[in-house]
Length: 103
Image (cartoon, rainbow, N blue to C red; front, side):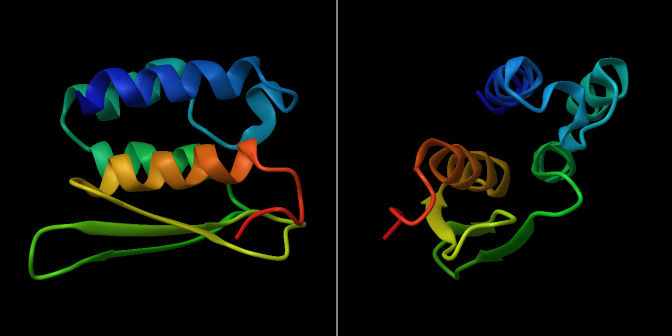
């Protein structure tokens, strides 16, 4: 479920080293976006202002998201059934991989 995944991702990011400084909205504003179904917009706010991203949807309905974190040499690209899930997955893989290790 996109709602749950987005909420969990925001909670994890707030508990990480950047805390509330990674660029997302206040918890109340973020939750409001999710309640109205603005999943893609909510996912983009998780990226923060310095992160590059590319989002596309193929004719088969599969979404691709690429995330390029500041200070990294490479982007991470993921496919998923929705745009929000693709963005969150690409962000998670980017954050999990040590700099210089992403293929």
